[in-house]
Amino acid sequence: MRIVILESAESVSQRAADLFCDQLKRNPNSVLGLATGGTPVATYRELLRRYDQNQVSFEHATTFNLDEYVGLEPAHEQSYRSFMNRELFESVDIDLAQTHFPATLGDLTEAGQRYEASLVEAGGIDLQLLGIGTDGHIAFNEPGSSLASRTRPKALTQRTRMDNARFFDSLESVPKLSMTMGIGTILDAKQILLIATGQNKSKVCRKFIEGPVTALVPASALQMHPRVTVLLDEEAAQDLERADYYREVEAIQSSLENQNT
Ligand code: PGA
Image (cartoon, rainbow, N blue to C red; front, side, top):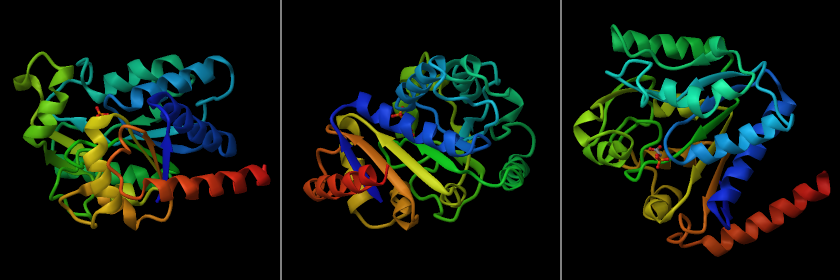
């Protein structure tokens, strides 16, 4: 894992946007894996800013979101479809028909299989954006999820529901069930970018980066993937034991990259 510690949350969103812009420049037909939650909002704003300056286009991109709440209408303001329309899709040149979410109606097991099939049909995800829950979840793969799991229904932990209650009127209105890509699905992405900011993520960042690979910390499965970048601000990085080493490696890595450009 490439661990990059940046001075601020703003630098995290700028660096994350750099990776998306580079990906789209290399391949305008890229398949992007997108995430929701509080953390990616700043990255989407940065992408919008660059779009407005003609620095990036989504015209030929395809997107797959990680997850969706079960039980909310797509038009509900807290559905992840609404979130993505509001935060990004409505303001850029993306073709909405090329933006995908797991279905949340009907037979959910079959809906998961259909999502997996459409991912394969699209050629797989080129760059997957992830946040991390304070309980270590990636997408809605809560602790205990199989590290080989595929898209399926998954019940939310009380902790996740409490974390997300800030977006709803009350804890009771937060859905109890989601449809989510599995950990195995996420690990199939060609490249993964996890972003985490703020002190409330520092303990879980230490666990998934420096602890053992365990289903109890789903993000630790990323240790098994060959191409993961983790962007952290100073606050999220404050509990890392080997922060100095990551900074040294990063300084060497970026000087090598600068020589090559
Ligand atoms: P947050 O959520 O960005 O709102 O903290 C992250 C996540 O649950 O993946």
